[in-house]
Image (cartoon, rainbow, N blue to C red; front, side, top):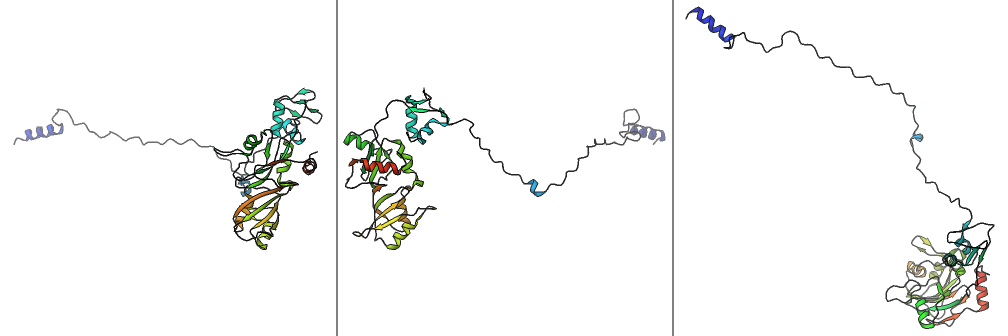
Length: 304
């Protein structure tokens, strides 16, 4: 082969067949090194003073009680405190414009100052006090469907409409309950701190023992509460019967006391409230509380 021909073929391969010198894909010369930008300097943090463990404990926030700055007391509370009427009755008297403060008709929400003069306009209603024997199955307050309460029974059988029961007596219990239209007696009579006596005749499902009576007198634990001291008197005629005198009136108290000692009540009758006795009354019978009896009753309640 001709040497000149070989030289031309070599030149053609070097130019990739394009007719010019081959371009290098490599960068010519030295590349610049990448320079990292310095991060901005943060201001130096101030050193914290050491904190004691006690200081770290945060005391719980206690809500601050907001006291009323209004002078005097509410009119209905004043009337109740004076024994003129219960708070509910006082509201009725105020709404019917029968209460005067310093000679002016009072309004609901008015307050009484020590220097004010409060008067009851017009004549007061005649107060009535009745001893009533509630029979078993009769409701004291708020009867449900197909139930009969004391007020309905009195209205139907005797036409009495102006008195309401003071206190309660269980549906399955019977006996004495006082009815009146005098709201002054409600608070003092029902206040458990007043220690007014109520006496019951109780019949249970087995013989009453001296130990049982002693425990009833000392007080019985019922659902975390110990009842106040009482008096238990066994019946000389019936070994399953006794009388119990208590000075409080928790819900179903006597039944729960007996149950806690392993006895079940089969009959419960209230025979006395303070000095007022049921006497010879039968279920759904009533009698007016007499003058001397009433005077003693009101005096023990602190009502003149």
